[in-house]
Length: 86
Image (tube, rainbow, N blue to C red; front, side, top):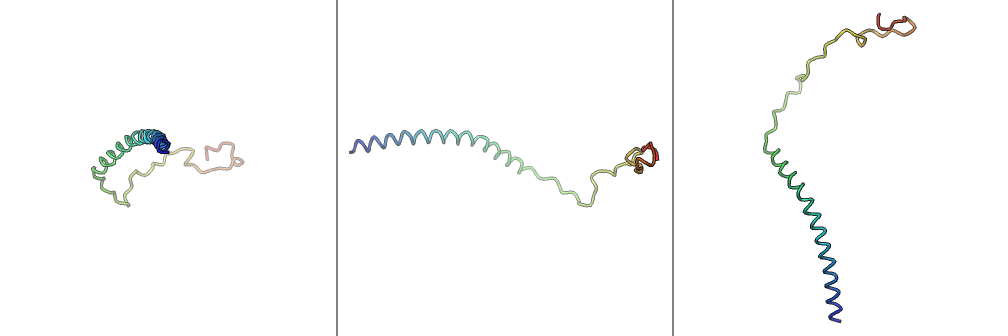
């Protein structure tokens, strides 16, 4: 009976050791990008953020109205044969 228990423990240990090796290899593969991302996060946290801009200032200038088909009044097709000239 003792040797049956020893054999069962050794067989289970072999399977368990293989399971530990597989999961350990997966953990090593995953810890490499996690470490790089952690150092990137710390590097970005060390830099100060730019000062916030006031909410009422415009960031872009007003668009210039240029003459063209978009600025002209729409004319129904039945009113005139040429829609571009009003």
